[in-house]
Length: 500
Image (cartoon, rainbow, N blue to C red):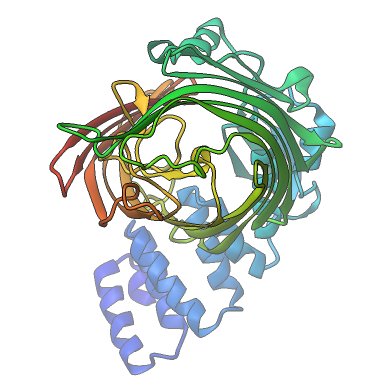
């Protein structure tokens, strides 16, 4: 410690390391080593030493405050709170929003679990973040702590808010007409009169994939923990069910699908880690211009008529490490439906997912890495439009990015089936950012298999796709460009989609 006071940092470090070998259970050595590393601007080493000291005495006030300060200076508010809370800090003096938002003050106030003149806890911060996200009008935000001279902190909520068709004319035009090259427009109106009520629409006139939908969503009872969603979805699609999306391919069947559906859903947050939702769907489908081909499209699969479906889903965050910015989350979804056909049929669909997300930098999302595993199982007789599909297609969320879900504009070129397993891992490096435009580029690896009772459907083998993906975000509109290679067939796939 005398050497440290003389700022002879290397000598002080050597002396403390020698002492730690003699007394490995003495917390004073890693605490002082953390101080030396901090003075040498070796933040990673300082955090490592202070965590070692806290493993010896988790209640040490000085060590907890030191750890909190290290993470606070890095901008990792959640990790800082974890250690400050052990020392009975931080006390919040004032809560401010910068810049001011159009959201109704009462609604925003209900989204914040914390209050001035109280202790801010990790649980309060995370619960507030979930409520803000549940409003669906704040795509980007952060909570900043500003230290005051009296030892307390001001909490500042900084956010970008979606309002109307767009905050500027350029944003409104981009959001509405970003899909014009895919023969679709997406007028979307957000935050109606500051109530967090959103109206989302799509109109697609592609002759092989006609679609129109209207969704209305908002907080239930002006409570950010609850959200309702209701809407209608109309489709008129031409399908060519084929064995491959490229090269010579066997036509397994073809049809025109017309489907009309009305849906409703209610969701509620469960603290800071969970969310449940339940809903219904009433739909009608019929099939025209059916070409049975080699028999993949049987009579049971193409039963027309009305359907009533009940859905239920629960999401739960299994584990999180604020220091490493690593999370593991899970989801389970059930769909039970009844079809009024001759004879009547019923079916059940179960899906489960597990997702990990790692942000290796102390702040921001540079080098973001994620892995997601999903599986689906069905019971009973499904209609054709309820089959799973593994492939890159704008109306499909089970992406196998080396397989395209449409060929010559018609869906059906990706593997279809009743049950599936899908794994996707990807990472993204920010290659350009100027505040308005952000571009990320990185590799991915997808693998999966899909099964079906019919030998003509399904993948029959495990599929492996790899490639690179670029994500560009401009004024709140995202464009994803993916190049994937099917490692089994050697086929190459290029895919572009728009995400708001």
